[in-house]
Figure 1 (cartoon, rainbow, N blue to C red):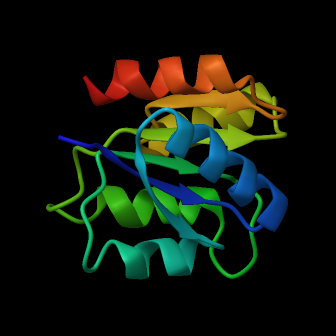
Figure 2: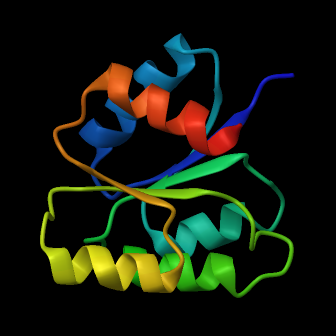
Length: 121
């Protein structure tokens, strides 16, 4: 069965790169341009893994992660943070909010797919 990945990023270029990388790896890809839209998608979809940015308008990655973790239906979905941020305090904050892992942009497609396979197993 094909696994579904939700990507949440305000950059169209980054969403396009993720879409190509993940589709090539055989995943079904859902996309949202910010945390609010990401939570809307989760109203009618249940992805196997979520990949989210931190710095976004309307609802940032921290708020989005807390929103996902606050919903019983989605509490167990692995969440990978994909961001330009490498600050230890922000990593810790994301982990406390419920993030499963952290990947710094620009991403290596092979490493990203490997990380998704690990958390989706």
